Image (cartoon, rainbow, N blue to C red; front, side, top):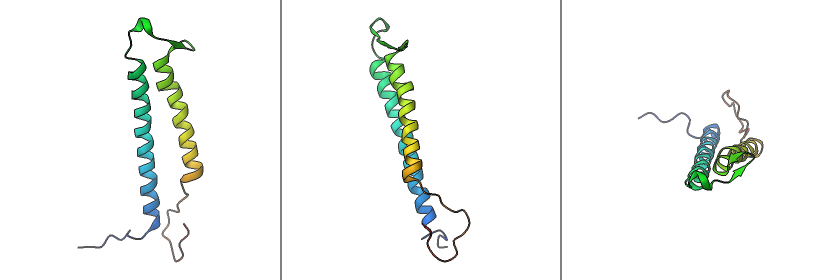
Length: 95
């Protein structure tokens, strides 16, 4: 069996962590959207409340949800994600 040549390369650990964070953010976005869309949207239309001319379920699920997820992406990119060189490392660990 051939040993994985990427074992020990920290770039793959960083990439895996960032991919999992991206998947987690997508799952969070879906749960946020689904919760507000079907939570508030399950009422009869005659009982809807409106915010800025939009049904509250749409406003919270799509408008506020979009803003929250964009802010979370910005925070993740600025504070958590690392710049990783694509060229092979020669010697020291730069991460």
